Length: 145
Image (cartoon, rainbow, N blue to C red; front, side, top):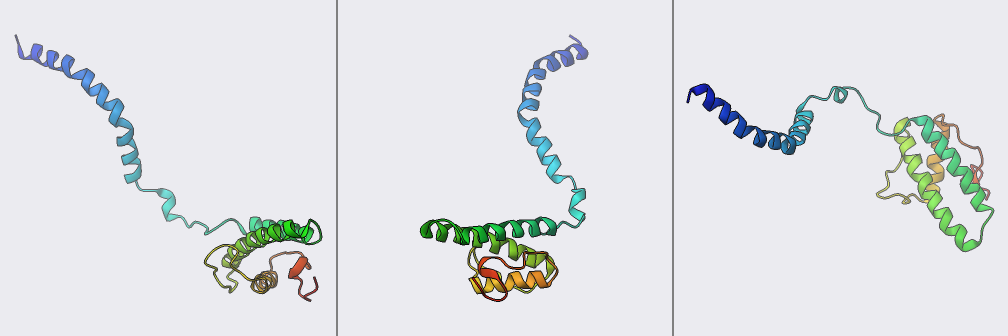
């Protein structure tokens, strides 16, 4: 038996094991290589949040919903819904304030802003150039309800 025949026999014997290992460990190896590969997008600046246009549209929609809820629904349902809408308004207002560099208090959790803080933040955003409705529910500049 020559050396070439021994090599062929070894190749025939090892091939199924190598194919099985490639099927089992191939995806892991590919994902490890992909993680180690330098990310080209990492060097590009990324926005901290959604686009300011989307934030403004969301705030306008939420403020209109707040106004509609203020003048409708049963008192018990209205209170719960108003709290939820005010929390959503607060989250979007804080994101918009961060995007526009408007000074604000960063709440620990959503819905932590008081109505006075939220009204001041909304007016600050409007003064910074964000297009918001002029009078909305409890957040009017003149304080009327």
